[in-house]
Length: 327
Image 1 (tube, rainbow, N blue to C red):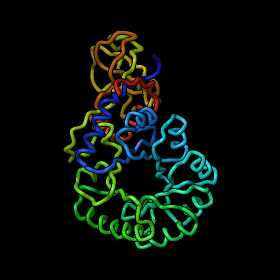
Image 2 (image 1 turned 180 degrees about the vertical axis):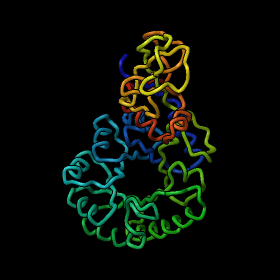
Image 3 (image 1 turned 90 degrees about the horizontal axis):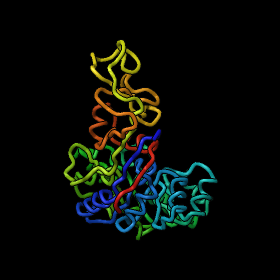
Image 4 (image 1 turned 135 degrees about the vertical axis):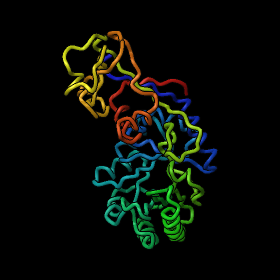
């Protein structure tokens, strides 16, 4: 097969979600943005539907794709819509939008969407209203016929106790002001890192990375990676000729090399000449046409290549033909 292959283990996804729920003891907002971190958002969402109270995606287009795939649970769009077309798509597919600024609020009100979550900026400085203006934003939303059903923020350094407590204080202030206007609004703050660092007082937990089997270095959750990636040997093993192993001079003298049909065009990391756009030269014996593992542990691959687990999962999953097991 020319494409890389990804095996997605749905039972592991569900086990990871159950572990998150055991730790959190509150409803789960399952983050399935960027095609479920490369695992396939629709399949992941269907597998997690019995366990998740809500799903979260990055864009209205992602949310629409979940609806088309038959996902009927609430879907929160985390990034602000930027055009009227996105607003219309969110309305037509029954998505919950994020209100992140005055400009975003105006677009959401024009869209005709009736439910949104208010994002507040507690220190990450990515999206959100200042906490002191949360009540003002909610009153404007209510006047426009928009129901704020949730309020959220994001921890920028959850393992730092001082930074976390500072953000928690601001978030509590924002939540109090939101609930003065919308008493039923649900709050959520912690992603995987926040969950590991203790109780945040919110109503829900909003987790992505842990669902797919990974956590920060300080993690203590019992998780299992849910993706394994394979590539096909496109050049069987043979003694090398000359001094190369891909582009550039070989790192050492090899006795035998083979080539996998995968490269940085398939989402893998180029850290040297051995990986080309569509091929990767490796040491060792291998047979032409044989399927070989590229990784089963994205963390080990990420550490080897100096990137994040997030990048490895999303990039490798995007280019792979997926096969699902369990679930």
